[in-house]
Image 1 (spheres, each protein chain N blue to C red):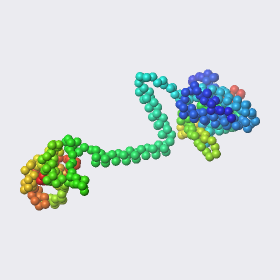
Image 2: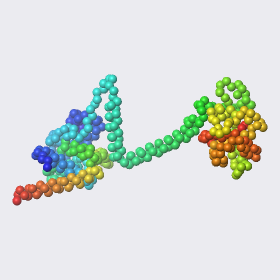
Image 3: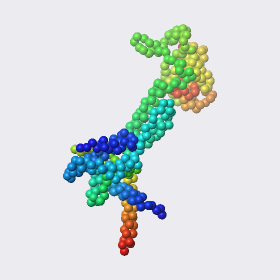
Image 4: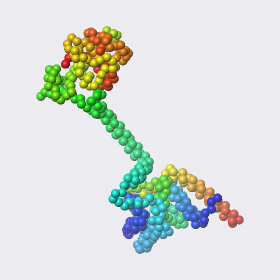
Length: 117
Length: 289
């Protein structure tokens, strides 16, 4: 088994978690960047916060991989905004990441419960 | 409201992004910062507090430029140096453009389908028109030295094109200093072929002896017409088209010298033509000049 140091583990965890958050929120409908940030912040009761410097590079990275697709949309009475939606590939990745994440959380839970027992 | 776009641009300078890409990123991020700023003001922050907090969005934990550098493709402007062969770079740019084009087309299948159909129809129509133009105008005649062949018509004040009268042809030929030879061709006429099977309605053209040498064609069987056969009373000779020879006489090599009846008059077959596309449908009958 490959061992990773704590710093790298923390970075990969954050990165993987952030990707999963964005992909999950785009599963139901297309959203723009600011909306994604607000939903993440609201649903996590302020625990998870994205600033622009990390959110948009993440969106562009996911778009470059073909997992999400961004399009400028003009709606009546609103300013032009870039909406992101999940692509077919993105749906497959989301399903896989969800499964990995659930296994990961379950494993962590088992470990921490054992420590507490 | 502060000028977010300027702030963002300052942070992107070192990335050397493509101008259109940079503009898109600046616009999107500026909108985000506008929303953050408005939200902070609504929440009771002063303009200064709101502005400071919004700018922190760009560099709080991660630097915007550092994060974008990992994702965005950077454009390295190449110095223009006189005398340098830029072909390699042109090819690299072409490949990049092709990949970009392919990605854009795949992203919009509806547009791609319409574009492909439009192109297909356009190319198809152009090909069809060109085929007709080529066959009618451009394709060289199936004769030797065809670029040296010209058609001569008679022109009158009333009509641009009239077939040439025999007397005019004789004068033209006697005074000719320009052309290698001049042959007069009569229009096709209908003839009934009888006597050796089912009667058949044919078209034939009266031609002089010098026509085939002038066109650089020779019969594949037998011979062409002779000068004597241009004379009245000696012109009961014919050359069969390849199609008639194959269809009615089964490609019989011994047809030369045999007699066929045209308009119930006996004519001797003196030759058979090869397959020449433009004269497949016409039989040749010796004619007077």
